[in-house]
Structures are given as structure tokens and as C-alpha cells.
Image (tube, rainbow, N blue to C red; front, side, top):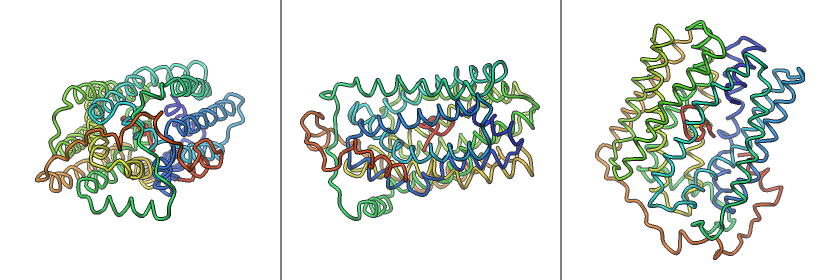
Length: 419
């Protein structure tokens, strides 16, 4: 709901595709600049405690934006500032949240858990955009942000109620110099990690700019309004649910070229969506876009987590967040500029070309590679949280989360939008 509301709020204030691209870029610029530091923090501290802090800060951001909008005090620079603040929160939240999945379920169920998590997110997207469209048309944009702020009560409550003894916690890493540099070197010298990250950098920069390209398509190419955009997002979310369920049911299949094939299919369907003549055709194609999007994200996410060494997992997933979320400050303005000066269809087609390019790169790199074996849980890497001594760095130190914030999505998250 907040994604829909923020995009439409910027268009209402400016009517500019470039401004829409800029606000999206500001939301993810901190991830691009400081994302790897968030991965270092995720490896150093208790993940659940850090998530309570980051999710609470995200709730405050949504509440402030909602109150400014409802009272009519909102200005474009305020939207920019709050989007940037959320970006700093995501620096620490994204790698921590993604690696926390493994601590909840263990390595054997990781593929299924990551995919089902994406299904839940995108099932919400079937309902959320529709509700947002109704609220915007009947009441206004502000309630979208306020409802989102209230939803974090359930998120934080769920984290606090988890049983510590059931978590497969990885021992936090002690603070030492050069940890970020060690993570970068480790990824670069591991082809099974380097190739998916390069693919995500290409796709993330130009294809996952749906917060920019879809509102432009809805308003300028299809002649619609906020309800048109919400319908497009809902149909994409429905496709992501279908794609996620199919992927979750095939957890035993881990062919090395699955990621490349998903990228190629993703690119082809985006190109088809860019030339759809009328809204009904566009909605049908967007179902396929959502399905292939979730397959690409789920396969890439689990490939990285199962390949990475446990002590490096937070840093590896922070680079995934940089490639996925941090690329937006580059791609968002580009897509917005093309949408405003060339056309909305061209902006969307650019993402399709990026998907094809990533697929070709991945196929050439991964086609001959052997599947990376899934690491089995061991007493040294996955142990109950209750048996682990506290790390030297306190997660609840208010200074530490702020350092983390100086470090994704969507979508998050994985989904058709960034989380």
C-alpha cells in the first residue's frame, strides 16, 4: 500500500516521471553506498534483536509520512527525506532479514522457506494495491501510509514471541578489522556467488524499476489512474504467488542454469508487457512477469545462501541487497527520464532488454557449472540460540542500529517490487 501511495503522491505533487525516479532512487541510495556495512553488522549481532529495531524505525517512517499527507503539510522534499531515511533502515534490515530465514528453518528447508515467504508477500500484494487504489480514490493517499505503520505492530510482535530455543542461530562474528574487505574478496573468488550477483546487478538496475515504469505505463500509455496502477500491481502479485508456489513445490531441483533461464523468461515477458495495446492484455502479461520475477529472485537468493559460508552469509546477502536495491539510484532516474522523454513503453522495454542480457551472461557462466551442494546443519554453524553466548557487540545498543542504517528491497523482499 505504501509503494502505491508514495508513487501516486509524487505524481500528484509533480506529474514528473523524473521526480518519481528520483524519490525511488533516494530510497535505495543508502543501500548502494553503505550496503556492505549492513552485512558486516548482520554477521556480528543477534539478528532477531536487530530486526526489532529496524522494523520499528520503518513503522515510524510510515507514520510520519502518513500524518504529513493527511494534514496537507507534505512537500516533495519531505517525501525525498523520508524515502532516504527508510533507505538507511533497509541497509541493516535487508541482509539481516534474509539471513534470519535460515536461522528459523535450517538449511534443508531454506529453498522452500524463501519461496513461501515470497508467496506470502505477493499474496498480500494482490490485496494491498487494490485496497490502496480504493483508498486513494475515495479517501486520499495518506491512509495508505498510516495503515502500513500500524501493520508493523504485528511484525514486531511476531519477532518478540518467537521461541529462542527453536532458532538455529549462527554464532555472531567478533568485531575485527577488514571484515567487509574479506567478504568482497570471498565473493569475487567464488564464481557460484559472483555470477548471480552480477546478473542481479544488471536486472536490478533496469528491470526492477516497476515503481517507476508501471505508474508511467498506467497513466501515460494506458490512460488510466491510481486504480489502473493498483490493478497492474495486483495482477503481477498474483503471478508471483503462482510462480512462487511452483518453485516451492520443486525444492529438490537445483540445476545450475535455472537462474539464467528465469532471467531470459523474465526479460521476454517484460518486453511483451511493454507493447501490450490495451489494459486487459497488459494485465494478463503482467501475471507472467510476476511469476518469472519471483522464480528469479527465489533461485538467486537460495543459491547465494546455500553456497556462502555461514560466517560470510550476512556479507554475501548484503551484496545481493546492493545489487537488487542499491542499483535503484542508478536505474530509477534512467527509467524515469526515458519514460518522460521517450515514452512509458520504452522505459518498460529497457527492463526486458536487461533481463535478456542477464540471462545470456548467466547461461554462459553457470551452464557448465556443477550445482553447489547444500550445506548440512552442524553443531558449529546451526545451534540453538539458547546455547550461544552473547556477542561482544550488543544489538540493542542504540548506536549500533544507527551505524547499520548508514549502510534493499520490495520486495523486497523478494517480489515484483523491491522490498
